[in-house]
Length: 607
Ligand SMILES: *[C@@H]1O[C@H](CO)[C@@H](O)[C@H](O)[C@H]1NC(C)=O
Ligand SMILES: *[C@@H]1O[C@H](CO)[C@@H](O)[C@H](O)[C@H]1NC(C)=O
Ligand SMILES: *[C@@H]1O[C@H](CO)[C@@H](O)[C@H](O)[C@H]1NC(C)=O
Ligand SMILES: *[C@@H]1O[C@H](CO)[C@@H](O)[C@H](O)[C@H]1NC(C)=O
Ligand SMILES: *[C@@H]1O[C@H](CO)[C@@H](O)[C@H](O)[C@H]1NC(C)=O
Ligand SMILES: *[C@@H]1O[C@H](CO)[C@@H](O)[C@H](O)[C@H]1NC(C)=O
Image (cartoon, rainbow, N blue to C red; front, side, top):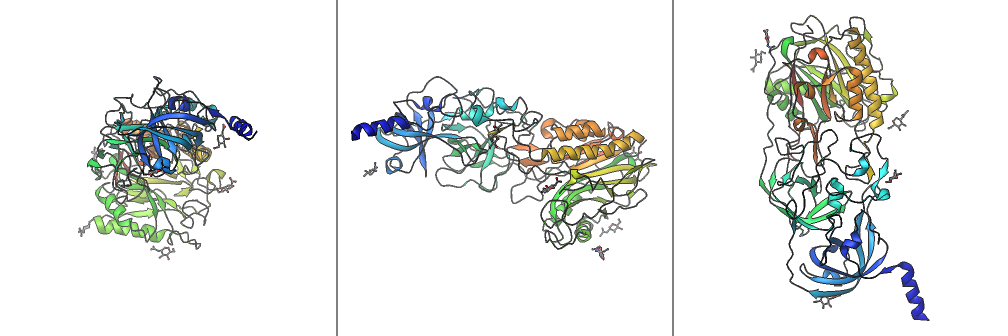
């Protein structure tokens, strides 16, 4: 009776007779054996970690969708005793594991039993990606993105719910899933972005087809292309440490390791630390043009200077770059200036000490005189680092540029377009009472005269809400959640409506909207902004190569969150525009701000 009860119980929890690793993985994301105990699994130990081992099937199938390898999560002595090159048979329970609800699952084996070593000393040969396997798809992540990984609406499907059949030739996530647990080699990889705080580093293989490769060796996202051909190199399995100084464009030695889904990404867990063989330059290329100090060709800079307070150690670096690398633009759109007490939440809103410090440092570095203008926010109402009261501001060279009929508005004065066109407040904040700006930075609108011009040019300095709360390009939720997209869409509508009023009065008015839009040119809020304002991204106007359009480095992608948008009057053949990669090319310790600045050369004469 006892025996019979025990075997009934066993049947109830599900025991499946000898299956192959390919059968366990199946041709989808989730194993159809999940939760069941499987017996007689046979595999070659290809790698070990402190928490388990990886097994490769000794009886592979010929289906490219079914991975032939599997992670066995266990620190049982029978497992830790095993050595790479052993062939074993064992029983275990199939399980789907993830550490957060927004991640993809890892199919793994747990609670091993009846571990029998069949042989040892077998040869372990990694699969070379692009040689023994195809190279990863370059554009789309999953069929569930509907062809556009940046499309709206977001979050309409979850991979873990749909569990689609893998199509590794078309979709990047399917490709990596089809190699889950596999020991692979990446030949001649290039680093595409600096490591995160865990020293994990994104790379792309040297022999892979890849879209968006920029001239520095990074990989730039573009319309409908989020670069799934990249992979993040995780913590080495042998206890060595990846370098902290890797950066975009560095060439590294071939990497061999295990493909593993963890923390929401497909990782390559390298057998040993990655080694930089040929470092890329971290020195930005200075702007190649200069102002001729009349309205016919002024230089216009734009830079998010990342939480600049009077005590910030990066003020001198920013000042030095403004002078030497940006060529001291005639006017600068600046974002993220903090108040005089920085992040101390003490009711102080004025930033005149911060801005005075910046311009006086520029003066001492370059003997160049700048004036500045900003409008204080209402205390604690504009988001950003708590207490910092970040705002946008302009620096300008008064020998070339001056405010046109100055009449500064207060924090709560809403600017208006008056007949002329001219501005009611100069400068003045754009619709500061609009709900679109709840807890975020209000744009600062100004009108200016440049030397030699008969009429004003208009500027709108923006810093839209950031992408907080989004989900990753490799997450479960599809298309990925573009955090705070609805707020940026509302901000696009309010900002563009104001600009449209200027151009309605005078279609030939020179208008520049620049700043940190916190959004890509090919994503809805910016598309809305361009369509309704009548402005065009200068990258498009001057024909910047698509892969060179970047001001930011995030995860695997070089990307453009910052833009300069110009009205038709400024869309001339003589216009120029360059992104200066002070940040994207830097090592972690070499970072000055988290954004790259950009500089334009524009004819703002308005005739
Ligand atoms: C592990 O290996 C040791 C030494 O070879 C052996 O004595 C021990 O029985 C093994 N343990 C298991 C659980 O296989
Ligand atoms: C996707 O999963 C998340 C949990 O991460 C859940 O909140 C959401 O409702 C799911 N969406 C769909 C469309 O199933
Ligand atoms: C620079 O200014 C002069 C007038 O001072 C003008 O003749 C010349 O065309 C300008 N250069 C450019 C590139 O516009
Ligand atoms: C900042 O503004 C206050 C109030 O107008 C003024 O007293 C102070 O001198 C200014 N500080 C600087 C550095 O300009
Ligand atoms: C600074 O520039 C001014 C003119 O703009 C010049 O007269 C002065 O000599 C310069 N000072 C130094 C130290 O170069
Ligand atoms: C404004 O933003 C805050 C903080 O993000 C949020 O708690 C609040 O609900 C928002 N209010 C409105 C009216 O959207």
